[in-house]
Amino acid sequence: MVKGFIIKKGQKVFFDLPAEWNLLTFAALEDSPQATDVRALALTALRHPVGSPRLRERLSPSDTVAILIEDLTRASPKGIILRAVLEELEKARIPDAHIVIVIALGTHRGLTSDELTDAFGSDLLARYSFVNHDCHAVDLVPVGRLPTGRVVKINQAVHKARFKIGIGSIFPHPMNGFGGGGKILFPGVADFDSIREHHFQYTFQDGTGLGQIEGNRFYEQVSGIAQAAGLDFIVNTILDQKDEANDLVCGDPVHAHLAGIEKSRGIISREFHGKADLTLITSFPYSEGPQIVKPLAPAAMVTREGGVIILCADLAGDLPGPFVESFERFHREHGHDLLGGVVDHFRGNHLIMEGGAIDFNMALAMTLAVQHRFRTILVSEDISREQGEKMGFAYAGDLKEAFALAKAMCPGRDVHIIPSGGVILPVLRHRSKGCLHSAREAMRAETGACTWELR
Image (tube, rainbow, N blue to C red; front, side):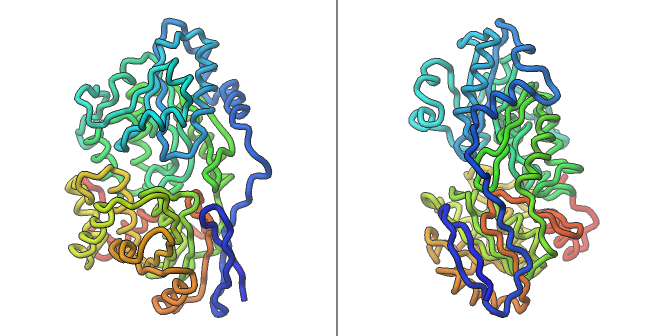
């Protein structure tokens, strides 16, 4: 009998694998030996930026500065990092009145005053101007165009500032390859229509995928727009498998980001011994809204076509009713060809969840693409059986029930276990492709299409 464990609500939960199953990979990542001193990391990085002089060498007291900072959907210690950056600006003798701090929400909701206070402190809120980006604002400023012709507009306060600094975090991303870098500007402070068009047009193109940068047009457009809009400097936290700060890099938005990506690969990459018939993965450390389905992407990379993925998901709060209902409606209307339905929506620039933020629509698209190719089982104490089944999952109340369902669905015996699946980058011994890339190839095979580019 083989024992394993998964991480649920931050704790290890042990179990026995069925005796007839063969464990290929137990993809546990090692914990950091000690707590990270984030302030020390930030000060060190700011003294040694990548591909750029120090901030104090690039700024003068007459300059205006916009600091773009990620919202609460990211777990980075953004308050500590912001203070370190502000100290550097103070040493450059930038007046407080010349600094605006813009919460780079993309299409997410704005932060409340209490959330701003909790994240950044009442002293900073009293001293500096904080602004929630609004992707629907009427005063957004054009900065360029996507290859589709769509004009990209950004936040006016960001556009007006002479110097633009982005504070974000680096971790595997299912479309951009990795988070961080230019994403803090685009989509962070851009308009809804250009964000939607970019995401819908480039998600299913060649090169798009988890951990993929080279040849990734999704990433290339993000970086290009950020450069065109004048993003000058980034400060990026490198997150570990617990979504905690492991390291930090800053400097030129492209060169520093690439340096951070290499560090990230070293922290969260895990080798897998071929593809399994069944992959057991958890949502940890993600537990909020659409974030909980992100681990389906790495699971799909290491599971055989038609195999089973068991997703053990924790959920803080509730899943919005329209999100769950969008799954149910889509399965009802496109159950015969989920992936084809997703692609048709994206080709036509149509939302799957009408009125929903782009991240909810992307979570829907990724989940539906995975459900097209794999049998998926949801195990959760926080999501009801009714909700799980409406979302298109087979539902299990616990691992024992999930294992029984998996045996009935798939005769194969090879198994991967990924105890914490939110922040991991699988590396197969043989050449592999990302979840959405593979989904694209599956669609080609079924339709006989000779091209996939969405134009």
